[in-house]
Image (cartoon, rainbow, N blue to C red; front, side, top):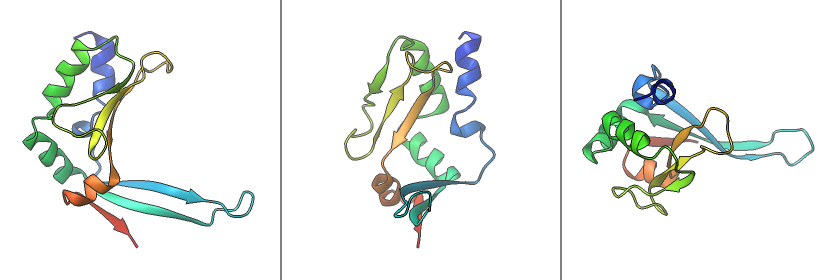
Length: 120
C-alpha cells in the first residue's frame, strides 16, 4: 500500500483515542449570527467498532477496499449496509487535496444498533 493511503487510513476510528464521538446536527440560528439550538448525539467508539467488525467491516477490510478503489469518487455502496437506512462510504478523490474516504452512518441506525444516544 502506498504511503498516501497509509497516511490517510490512520484517520480510521481504530486509531482514535476518544471513547465517544459527539455529533452535532440540526444547528439552528433563528437570529442572524445567534446560535439558538442543535441536537447532540454521543457515539460509543468501542461499541461502534465492535458492531462494524461483526459485519466484516474491519480496519483490514477498509484498507483493502480503499487500495482496490483508488479512482472511485463519490458514493460507494457497501454490501453489508443499506445505503438509505444504514450507511455508505464516500470517496472525495477529485475535489479535496487530502482525498478522504468517509464512512457515513445514519443517526437513526446508530441509535437503533445501540451505539449512540441523543443528549436531551
